[in-house]
Image (cartoon, rainbow, N blue to C red):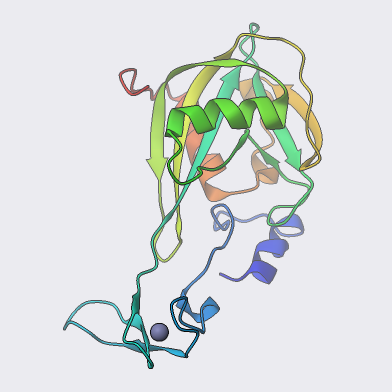
Length: 197
Ligand SMILES: [Zn+2]
């Protein structure tokens, strides 16, 4: 799915949301990062997917997944913290705080950092909800359950607003991503793996 298709989420929510940023396929990469010559898709092993190979130096560009983290944060009254996105994809739609994990950053540390940046709160991680990935989608989304240990919610400039929701108030038709929907569904079904963080 392309970035422009991601924008469609704003108008026509569907179960097939793009999970996180569409850091898409090899077609986005045209030149070798080592020598700047052209990359072309080549079949290197039978049955394997095509790889981008540099026509100049033979460098193979392996496209790795993108690791993202999201955190479902319960306030003391058990309501869940959500932010409404001010950026594409998913502009105007709701998601729990999260973002990409930096290379070398511990995933649980990224979850705590994103909660502080996007919601202005400190959290305690309670466990792993699950890990979400989809065919031909680069992001792998790791979702934690957490409890807020400070109270004042404050969103940053990546969000239009911040609010808390009880289970019955979750805006299921206005969620930003497929992983948002599936992780919330799992969370409210009581899925949690406590020995993960
Ligand atoms: Zn090259």
